[in-house]
Amino acid sequence: MFEKVLIAEDHQTNSRAVAKTIQDLDIPVFDYVYYCDDAYTRIKKEFSSGKPYDLLITDISFIEDHRPQRLKNGIDLIKAARELHPALKVIIFSVEGRPSLIKSYFAALQINGFVQKGRLDAIELEQAVRVIAKGQNFISPRIREQISPSNSHQFTNYDLTVISLLAAGMQLKEIPAKLSELKITPNGMSSMEKRLNHMKTVLDFKKNEQLIAFCKDMGII
Image (cartoon, rainbow, N blue to C red):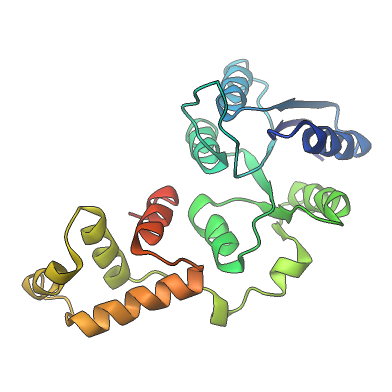
């Protein structure tokens, strides 16, 4: 079982509820913070002391307030924490419910568990901690049931090239010529738009800008 856990959650009620679950598991040391920057500071301090945290439990969305933050959300926090402390185990505790996006968290961020906030979240969080302590991954059952090849997306080199060109500021109508120049096929406008629309449908986005932002956040472009 884990010896030292950090909880990053900006809602006090949720934070205390998670802390109670951790306490019930007889984990001797657990701390909770309300800001991502504070979480990273704690992780860095304890890592430097030679007594690092074993597990980070973090939400994804954090409400902005009067305190400016360098790390804006849980994704920023996970990336920064893992860069410092690669062995740190991570559970995302979030209301997010899109299976394809959750699957991407495991692929791109290498998280160890995802627990969806809801009616049974305390039970599932306890299960997640126990499972991850044994070296396995955990996903809330109702999310796991929805993850299948039909609602997931594996980014191809073609996908990433098109998205990277859009992210670099190239207009959609200019990309077919660039693909042709790079000898990348298919390079027709129709094929490219169909592929972009497929990615947006699977990931539940409406705009190309959302797709670009997602890929940047996940570190794949």
